[in-house]
Image 1 (spheres, rainbow, N blue to C red):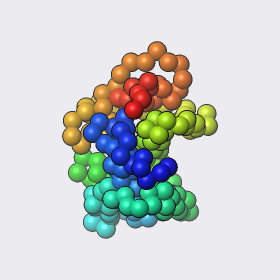
Image 2 (cartoon, helix red, strand yellow):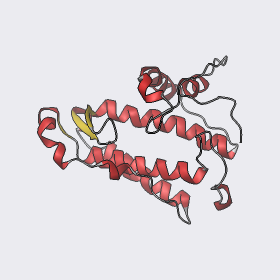
Image 3 (cartoon, helix red, strand yellow):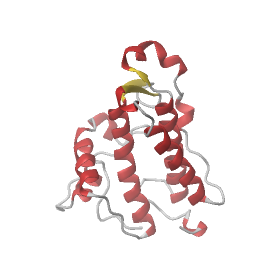
Image 4 (cartoon, one colour):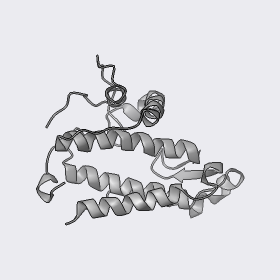
Length: 187
């Protein structure tokens, strides 16, 4: 990606690539912070005060080297998700309905679906292909189908737009359509 591409349009209404990357970087840091603060399920009810607040998830301004900034956020979240025992813990996500606690595998699934879709968004914006292995796509399709309708309302704060129909049999096209993207979108 070149710096002159930061202002290209994306499938995310009203967001240039710069805005999308700022969101993605912020989400990596937010989910990473939530994973690092994860607690055993039995302690979740009393441990939320020590959990990251919504500011941890805020978009991070993209500066001169967007690729390096993005890579650093990826390293942070992957390191946090790789922590021993994380899958047996709970994660507090301050952004969801004013803050909610979820089993770590569920919270990680939220992040996965966001990144499958946003990877598609970035690729479409740049006019390059994006591919995922079949297991990732199968998991992402299950998660996309389970996203509650209120999260697909298209209103401010909703994670996704309302689903649209698609005639495509391609799993990635189905995923993005379920979450309000037109699989045929082009800049």
